[in-house]
Length: 126
Image 1: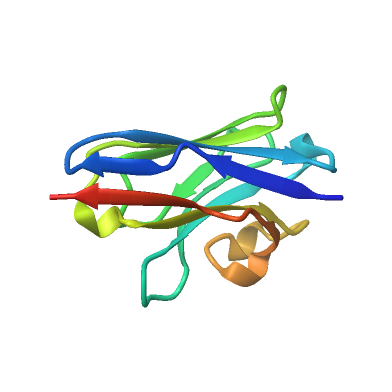
Image 2: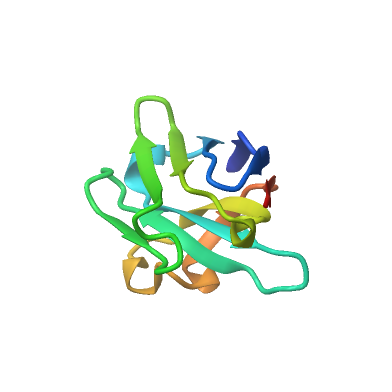
């Protein structure tokens, strides 16, 4: 069955960096776009970043543009999120997700994804 497992979360001071990984199994990873979302305590889950099936195209939320980088390694069945210049506002549980087929037009919306990881906590202190 389809499974995704995030790792790399933790606690960091403002201005620091973290690299999240999401290892996927149970499907042809190279055929699917992937996304990262996050959910802060008491808030709705929000889009962070998207990468196309071949890794050539990316898209970011305005709040992370220029600080976060999403990448996809089809040989390792893994998608990454490099997060730099972190601020306390980035504190959240981060989720990776598999995009539905032909759903790049709704890449920033939860309904554009069909499988989700369990999430990894990122805490940024000031």
